[in-house]
Length: 322
Image (cartoon, rainbow, N blue to C red; front, top):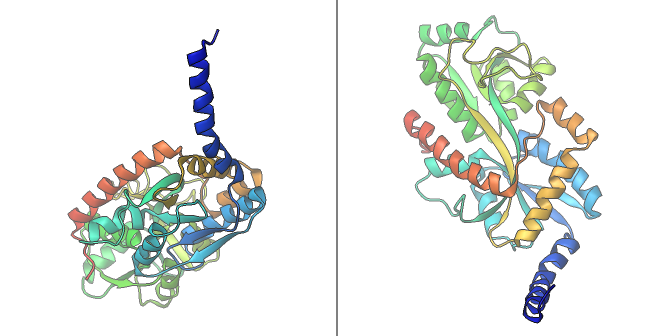
């Protein structure tokens, strides 16, 4: 039986817990904004819109997308880092802002670890090496041979830093040369691959699948250890003779630092709930991959390890922003 002292402690703990429980129960009390550091049509934007639609239905509140593209995601990250920590502003971002930027820039107006509360990973994606659909090149070996035979004649495009890192890693693994051309988003580079201005590009599986399905581009390999069900005919880098070309990027949700932990946990649980619905699973499958969600704690540890992993790759490739 409870003694008087134990009873008092239990009542006190319950009273202290009440505000936290109420905050979680009342969330969200208004419109929720998902800030995306890319223009509309980028892979992160496409996936974020799938979640926004279902979360809006679950919460009974509008969930809107705010595309703050440009600046390699720095303006968007800074905006979220300075937002009110009430859970109504959520960062739907990628490895670019959280793991790549810290290795490329000497100084950032945000800290990928200290400025945010991790919520959950959204998805994981390898990169796809792509050329024009009408190109006579049939394999990664064909592309590598062409680049080596004409070392000063070829360009590659990237609309995000992770895509550029993947392309630079391909050049290193293949021992080939090509000149980087920057774009505001990966989809904007696709017409220039088709026109011949760019010889190749490497992008995430979501946009790669869209481009391949509509007959715009042709895939030569993907940078994962196993083939992907959404693109079953694409060989892995190892199968294509480039075992060192192993790289995956990811997307995830963050809240501003100081967002109450019970609100962060509720958002995490609700994202897991909507991701498990047949409608969302079908839509994400069609885009190239099932969700790869995590607990809050696991995602926090993942973010720290990814910052180290991408930093090592970028230092090895000697990539800097001019």
